[in-house]
Amino acid sequence: MDISGALLYALEVMLKTVFDYLNFNRLIALTFSFLMAGGIATMINRRFILKYFGPDTPKGISYLVAALSGCILVVCSCTVLPLISSLYKRGASIGPLTTLLFSAPAINILAIFYSAAVFGWDIGFLRALYAIIFSILIGVTMELLFERGKKKEGKILRGRVGSVTSRPWYQTVIFFLIQLLILLTITASPKFMPFLNIPVYEGILSKHVVTALLILLLVVVVKRWYKPEEIKSWLLESYMLARTLFPLLIIGVAIAGLISVFIPPEYISRYVGENTITSNFLASLVGALMYFATLTEVPIVKTLMDLGMDVGPAMALLLAGPSLSIPTVLTLSRIWGVVKTLTYLTLVVILSTFAGYITGIILG
Image 1 (cartoon, helix red, strand yellow):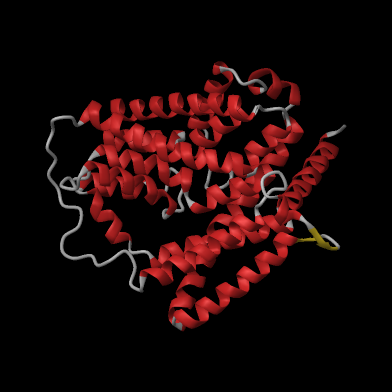
Image 2: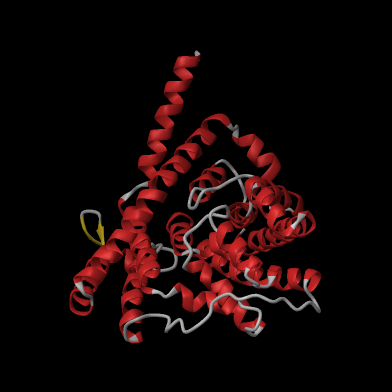
């Protein structure tokens, strides 16, 4: 095959990969992932959360808030760094900050639900669980190694910051719960939720009917409880997130298509085709050094799995990939210093290797 023929074939595969990924169910899942992320950004008071990073806050609360705050910050490892740097300079402890640094790219609402839509809820759930547990373990370890016995002084936030949301709590809970149910329904697999995958009429499944009813309920709730300016702000924020991240997702899917063209399956099978400590370590190390924009790790890992990558190394790559990259390491070394940065890198690679190996045993 000549060069022009190879390029045309690569382009054909890239386009086919993009269209295959963006099927009806995934488009619905992505849409409501963006809507949910936009709702979190506009309706949750971030200052209420950030105040828990102060040196006077009990560590247990700081770590829990830092781990769960990853759901709110729809960012990749590089874009969360300015926040980390700012909080560190203002007195936040390195432990909770490291927890936030790991969790923000790994468990944001878009990454988890898109993972579930592509891989299934077994991998999606395990990814979220590992990210929360490991983010706290990494944070506690960093604090014990570098700040034990030290007393940091600084001011994160002063004055009253109000409540976590400006409206009655039950309205906020119902608002997000309906969207969560939509995401759970549309991404339900026949293996775990067969009752949601019963054929109804010419390709329409029971989950499409349930999803339509939930969307109708969401419209009613939003119309009754939210002011027009609140709805506009929510939709605008969701649109801005989609405009920023969706092109990156398409690029990631296209790259996944290129991988399937130029990387022979036997290479994947040889190095990461089995669930061994070595293969998981290799996947973790490569993931820690590569740069993955938010969501792009999902189609790339899916393609590698289609080429023969075992589920264990795939999980290791899903965990280490979004949390680190060479640009992140270089930037962190300026904020924390080389020793702390290399320690963080080592902890991420080791724990991701461990998680991959355990996942391979459970799901292999």
